[in-house]
Image (cartoon, rainbow, N blue to C red; front, side, top):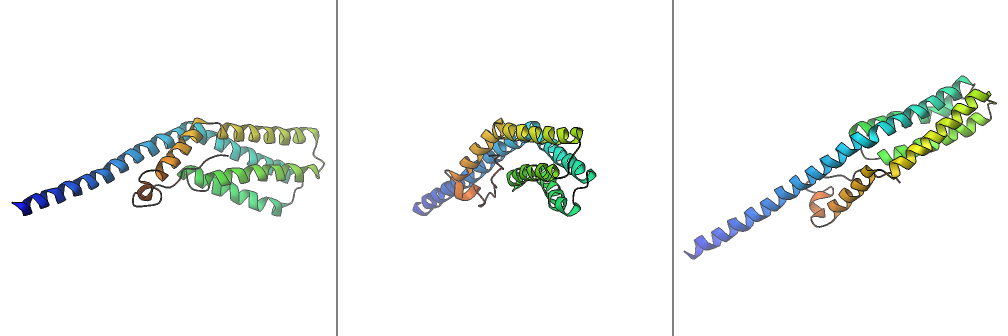
Length: 175
């Protein structure tokens, strides 16, 4: 009788631990899905718009005699950012920040090209729009929810969730 009781307690504890893993997984999976749905609804189009504006700045720069070699890095970053957007991937916030730096570099480099008034205005409008998008990204609900998700994966069962057994990666935060 004593052995059966020990076995029953062992099974009970094992089921509780298994339930904790499953419950954590389902909870974090649901939370992550909600945050990514918010990304798709709120942030994704802004990032695509930003990519398009930086691309347009490259076109204006090149059309006015800008150096092809100067835009190779910008072009590569546009492609990497597009891939990160599609996967809501790691490094997305970094790529977004680099795009802003690329845009500022294109603006400064284009100043040496003696752009006509229309192209100079285009470049200024693009950079203003990019700065507006950066502000929207930083103040978005997505950003707030991603911060909460990232903190939740580090608390409590963080060793299981944050790149652990359950394998949740941090979501990108726009700063």
